[in-house]
Length: 520
Image (cartoon, rainbow, N blue to C red; front, side, top):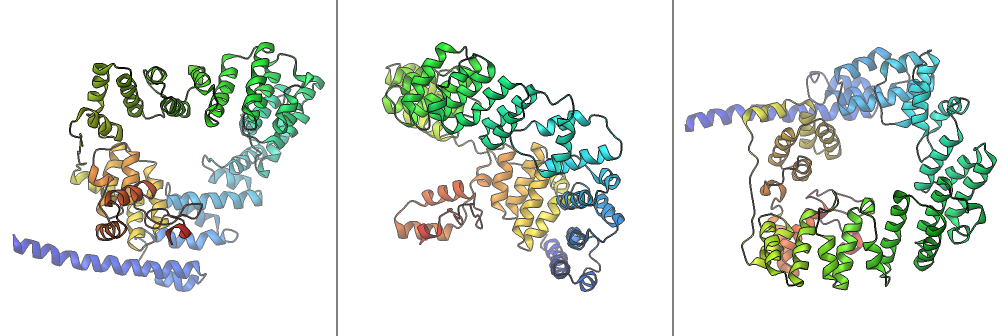
């Protein structure tokens, strides 16, 4: 057996040396190509054609030279690396180039469905210019009917729509509504100005004014008529006013409810905003207003506000009622059940509370642990490590994107590695995600392992989800600063998932996501 192990180790050493040499060769070729030294890069890339990262060298050659390389070279790259993140990036750049050149036939040949409105609109133009008119107006309407301004590439699309019978006042009002809901008041004013019917145009024009001065325009006589448009404008005004003066907003809403027949859906949105604003300001009527939110308008934000408000007011009856049913889909159901149990306990319904806590105590969750504390029982850890077969490992490592991520990680190109990894995750099944998470964990890529296992909703492998990293440093500084090591671990796990090079848009850095001044 010892002899066998020695043979395997001896065989592995040259393979590792070859991989390291290939990585160094790739780095040289890639850096030379990015620097524009094509001759040297091609020489350095000799023998790399089958390397997982060779496409990066080809991309670095093609992307800055789209204006002069042959279309065949681009097509060959897109075909050879179809589905890869780099093929998608080159396709985007190629489509932008073809759009600028107005090469419509080539654009149609290269196009694949896109999430980019500019590329979609160029595709629309390509279809129109090549005589493919089927479905053009339907697609133009879809591209136009959004709450924000679209890119300039969409101007010809929208000009065609504007000149067609499809462009009605009703369609203009539909987009106006979307724009105002997204606080795009400038776009809203432009759309209102294009309405043809004089009365509709006059009323729609009030929406912009309402957005900027709700207190004044909630009393505007021009909005006395009870129509869907006036109700939308008035509801918008009340919601805007809640940010400035909650009492005035409540009074205005009460008056408007008597003069306009708001639908349940229209009223529910306003009642939700009023109640949440009242809660933020600790208004005397906040519990009544929170209780009055229709079920159709209740979401996770409302669920949380209700629980916190009831606890602050120590209103156990309301808390018991608000937590008695299933919460909103995005709200932590275990949190709701725990506070239901606590409310029952405070109301003297001890046995009913213990039933709730017994059920909760079987869960490995913060609220499960709190329930266990109420009962005086041990925590349920429910630790079930992910098990994978060799066949599953082989299959995941046969994925070219996973291979590229591994190679990039080995060379410390972490941003590029993460980009490859997440591109592949989008295509994986839940089981494949579990296998990939375990693979990342074994590479020491713990932040991607944590994120990947979360995407798989596989929460029972505790060593994978909560690795004990940087133990020496954590224990040293925990002792030095007189804090628990578990506190430091919990902050690192919550703030960065152990991604040591994490940087937030605000400038927070590192494992604990501290601002530099705070850290100093």
